[in-house]
Image (cartoon, rainbow, N blue to C red; front, side):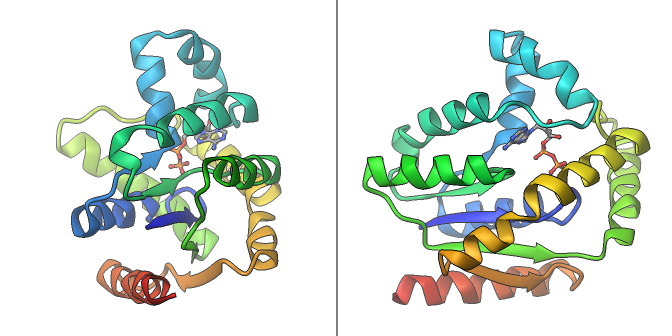
Length: 197
Ligand code: ADP
């Protein structure tokens, strides 16, 4: 099963992706996590990406397209994967369409979590407070200024993907303001329907 989770920062993509991993035994491919790992390791990609990420801007399409294309070839992706945070621009979506076609793969669904923007800043602040309380390390881009920038980037560059995937007939929209278990149940409905196709 190959899925894309679409939605603004703080929409709950990470939580839902984690639940899909547990339930279906397929990996979550989070470009955010992959880039943070590259930064932590101090690789060339990490060095190029760090300042851009900290400011809440988007890393170049070429870099993320390549990271994802290589990752999809890993053996643990053979049964499918959940893309979280990718594609994030229309050129990335076009690259993914080409990439999957070349690999002879197709998507089962693109699931969009729709949320009220006003709730997002509160969710980010809550995530920061919970991470601190648990003694964890807060992300460098989880501060009000970078978060606002991430929301701007989302509105300008990622929101148009809804239309892109409406056009391909793959988009399913779910109310991301519902409680987490309801969102999970809705996603399972979509996944179940996709499996029957
Ligand atoms: P969020 O919680 O905001 O959804 P992510 O963990 O998905 O954040 O991504 C964090 C940062 O990593 C982004 O703000 C961006 O700088 C970079 N990034 C992640 N995925 C992509 C992508 N597909 N294209 C460009 N930049 C990306």
